[in-house]
Length: 184
Figure: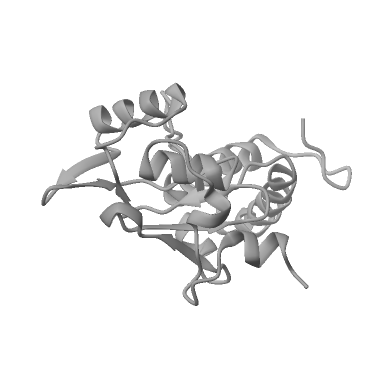
């Protein structure tokens, strides 16, 4: 599936790449890793540079397909963090231009059902598996979730049917709509 500069990969490189990719997926806090067999391969220090180079190329290709592989917290360094505080809920998110991430630690309003049934199902699943946890009378998100639209993200957080382009604001109070769609 992946060829780089006509390189041939030894079994050691492939095993090391598998171990490295699984470790990165776990560290990213974006995906649940359901690998039944954990590789027991020790990455040789001489192979590490090549493995990292190949992984960076794979990461770039996967990002063009809409799959982010980097750590969710590392993403925040250059990103503009947005918030919504309606109905006593405080949630944080990041818009990447094509996806919207609701960040771990955000509050979720469980008092109102979401207009789209799939988000109600997702909320129930997260409550059941510890992705949303009740704390001090509030429901706290324990994972970072990615949505296809800002409105999907705000619907999930606030319940009902919302317009994410006006719900999400930066620290200066500018809406996502003002920041991305109404640029002068």
